[in-house]
Picture 1: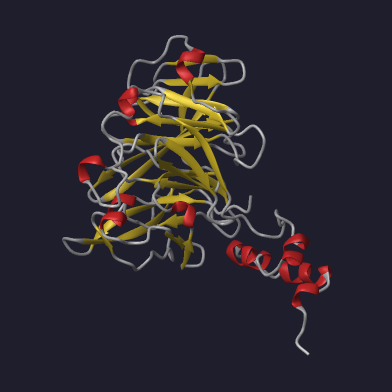
Picture 2: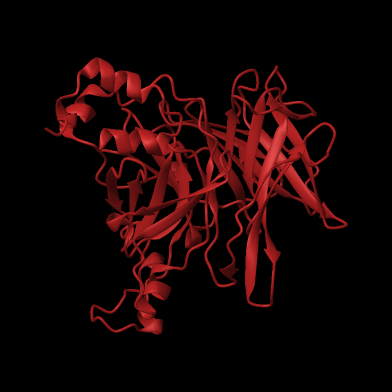
Length: 383
């Protein structure tokens, strides 16, 4: 007589689950059968903090469609275990990946954003933004026939999107910046039926210089423009405050990153390339009567995961305190040309204080065509 695994004692199922340290294997355990799924907690406390996965390059939906390739697959590189995770996600088909936040992918399609958790396969549709601006939609609708038409393909509208929290939690706010609308930001809550202009609501002394980057920090939206000026929006009381620049931007690139722990305010990561080496400086936002950026050379146990692709930091950055990882590090990835047509993704971790590369950091060995899309960090989440 074969064992009836579906009716295994809940206590034994719980013991088995505590032997698992990889989030994907925990999801597989939940998928064994309904009784196991009901027994296992959706938020296991024994799982360690997850090191972000790197989404490997993939083509655009139009490239897949043009070549008759299934675009429902996505591949991640697990930095902590030097392994590849491949997912088949039908909901992903026909959609552009325009970012990640709190373990969810942010997808753009047909003048609408959707959120997708690749681990749980949960998806959330956000309101259409077709009425945000007529400049976004005139002349770019895709032909409804099955044939590919280059002139009528969908034109992406989103430059960057951030979430205030995990979208499965109450009160999550989504803030988006559109490519053709300059420095304007729009926001919505998960249950909203339309997008609201952030600057119109808050409306006092808007910063006229082009926007560089923006993040959520303590339920506030922090933005920084090309002059280094900082504007802080409070979506609860619709207030806004703007502070002058204290940073010398020069020709370097910047990422705004959410601070955690003792670094409870936002951080700016400045990066520039000198003699083929990427140099980093980190600044902390200090608000002691006279708000300003102060350079720090030690960020404690934190590891900053940064995207260096694009001239603007339009993709995701992450700031985590990780077990079994030495802190005070910046982890980034860059393209390494292999031939004139192919490249590899090279991952490097740098100690912020010593400025030396951290040893034993492995990179994926796959090669990708130069026309492949960008990569981004995603911290896997079970909620």
